[in-house]
Length: 242
Image (cartoon, rainbow, N blue to C red; front, side, top):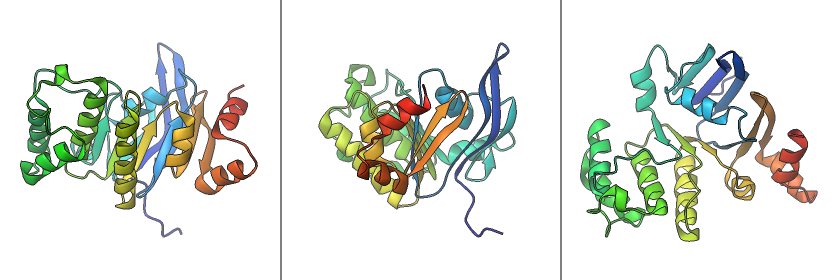
C-alpha cells in the first residue's frame, strides 16, 4: 500500500457529453501538493470542460471530482473553500474598486482583510489603482487583481485558466514568481495555456489532453530529457495531436 498523500485536485474517470457528443472520455487527472501542472491541448479537446467540473460549474456525467478530499457533488462548499480559481476573463465585478474586490473575497473566505489586502495590492503593483473601478483596469491589471483575489486565504489548490495571457513581461514574471512561491509552500496548482515555452519552464509536470483523455503526461525529468535531445514541448504537442 502506498504511503503517498491523496492528490489535492483529483478527477477520476470523468465522462462528460454535450447533446450526445462526448467531450471528456474517462479523464483521470490529479495534482498533488507542491505540484504545478500545465494543462495543454488543441482547442476543443475538453480543457475548459475539465476546469468547469473542477470548479463546480458543471457536473460530470460519470466519475468523481474532488478538491482537498472534498467531493464537488457531496461537499461542494468545502471543496470550493479549498480552491482559488482565476477564470480566463478574470470574473471580477466591474463596478467595484480593486480594493473592494479583495475585501469582498476576504469577507467571503472569512479572512481578516488587514494586513492581507494592502499586502496583495502592493505585491501585485495595484496600490495606486486600488480606488479605481475594475472596469477601468487594463487587461493586465485585471489579471493581476484576479490572481491576487484567488490567493486570499491561501487555498490548498489554485486553478488558473489562461492566466498569463495579457500580462506584460514584468507582470508575467511577477505571476510566475508568485506561483512558484505558492507551490513551494505546498499548494497544488493547475494552469492552462498555449505559450508552451513558458509552461515548459514553469511547471513540474505538463499534461496534454487529446480526444477527451490524457495523451501525454510529462514530469520534470522527462521535460529535461527532451531539452537535452534538442526537442521541445511543442514537438511533443505536434506529434501527439497529428
